Length: 272
Picture 1 (cartoon, rainbow, N blue to C red):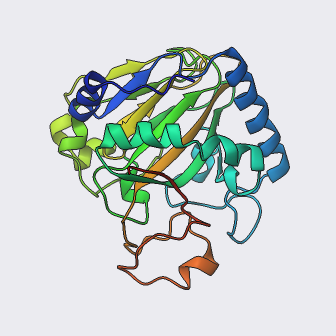
Picture 2 (cartoon, rainbow, N blue to C red):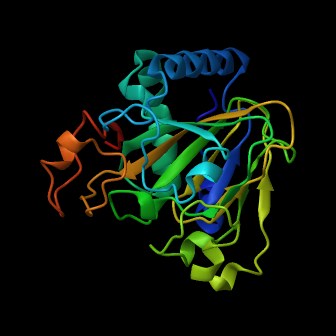
């Protein structure tokens, strides 16, 4: 596993709000990730988020157009909570250290993991932000996106708008039918140049939660599978947005409470 982060990479990430890490996983590690995620998805039997009422169709707050969105990607959240092998992958402190170095924080907690699979001929993922959906407020939060298949221009690779994380805020239209809705909130980026991030299977990217990003439609008869994890800098507090938090936990929280429950948001890295 390639977990070395150089100062040059930190500088690029801080400037652009994203970075691609080639050959993050070797061939054996890639196969382990693929099989582990596949098994974990099968075990969930359609349940999107653990701890939420109902099995199928649970929402984390980003779904604005149910019929369209169901054909954007298949999404299963917090597989680490229901599969021990996924937990081993997600709890890797070396990955936590990568996230901490890029974001410039001392401690990293898992916010949630997320399998994102674009089926054959799937709809595009509209331009959006991540952090405004989450239950905490931190401009340094970020995600890793691990390609389990080659992510290409044809099957739905990611696109980023470099530097947008420096100027975006908490207004966010969500992911819906219109690719350009986010630019109604941030018109300065309507004429910005986007950058494609195709990557071969086993490579990964990190992006800031305020970086405007999206993905192509899948224009092929094959799947485009990715495993992701969102990271919360340690020390954050509840902002009142439920997002993926289970009802039993929400009932114990009030706005301003520290999100330090290791059974929900485990600390995977702390600089000593």
